[in-house]
Length: 136
Image (cartoon, rainbow, N blue to C red; front, side):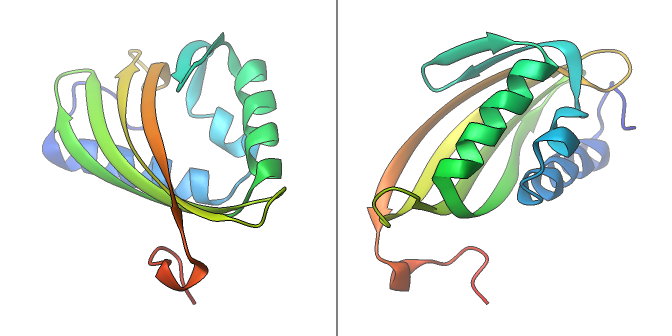
């Protein structure tokens, strides 16, 4: 596990590892990167703990079909990383495609688990033909 203090290389690897985990769409796997008592803000939702993270991600990926994510390191300090991201998905209820743009602020504990995640994002409707992430 990559632990603080971060270098540019270790911060880049931490971001890549997060992107890879999230693209599995496996809530159990994703949750292993977070501390047991991790605190989250995801848009307007505030919650705490791995079990809450798993439940949140299950609901997310039931609604957000064909989810594909790209993350980019924006900045880092000793135990914090800031990323910008884009992901595309299709709404399970309406079939509408979206591209979501946002930012995340991450704070890590001494063993390298994320114990705080603060996320803001906006969803932009797109046509399926406008997709650019994860197209085959």
